[in-house]
Length: 176
Image: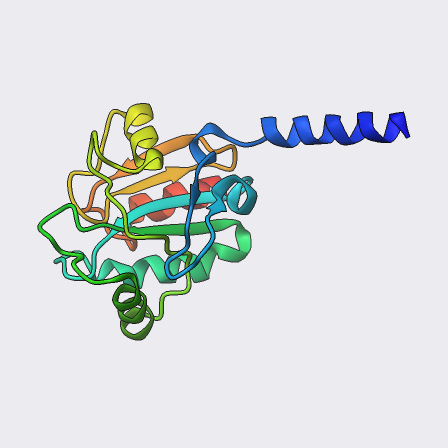
């Protein structure tokens, strides 16, 4: 019995260490009730973290983000969307309205999380961490952080870089 508990404790310690710092955060899924720990769901995957907004000139990027998710998901890419009203008040809706808009307009299936702030100094802990590691906080909606399978940020893409850009697609493919 003592050996069993020693092995169990060792396994727990290893799993706690295996969580990359950039994914060691919990957020409630859009319309969800309980937070999920990003490590538990996405460690070992290539992760594209994006702050989103439904009434922005960049909103059509949702279509390209979903396309990336569908095209590369089986190979290990996940797109994580974080709706934010920080820039120009372009995400004023409730979570239910955001969910309905994303599903009905763009068929979004990639994980979306609770509406949050992403601005430097006031953003959620994930975006504070990504800004600290890269020196770049989101300057507008649809800012993108690309993390490798070890949870390290390898590239940051501004809102101007769309999901269909060669630079973004090549960066993703190089990590898969």
